[in-house]
Length: 158
Picture 1 (tube, rainbow, N blue to C red):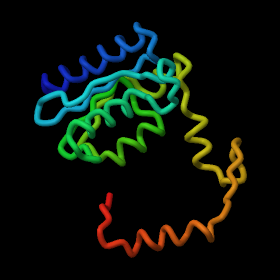
Picture 2 (picture 1 turned 120 degrees about the horizontal axis):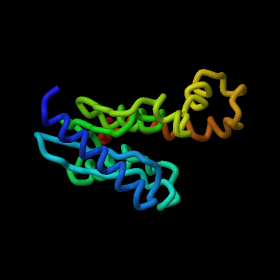
Picture 3 (picture 1 turned 90 degrees about the horizontal axis):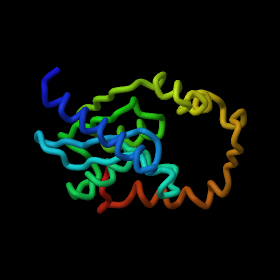
């Protein structure tokens, strides 16, 4: 592990402490780096913004993409103070950084009452066996939009 990885991880950990100490949200921080420079840094803002998606990783992905003028984090590295939750993991895969470094594990998070096991469990279940009700509605009316997308010549694929 080279010193730059440790430097950026320490910054992600500092961001976690900053967010926690300002009561912005949980104790999570993240940094996006490209070509050895920090593009975006941030922390969890769930409670301060009343936004359940404002996890540290999502916050920095949004900021980095905005600054880079791209919906992908090509050639970027994401440093996060904790192993990403299922939502953040999905966002990370969609953003496509070249690597992710994390400090604490999901087991460490569970030990302080941030346990995502129930989400992993729900993903494994059939839709009708999940704890939350999911109802398919108006598929026939929605399919033409998908067909139009498939035929669209000027779309931006991602």
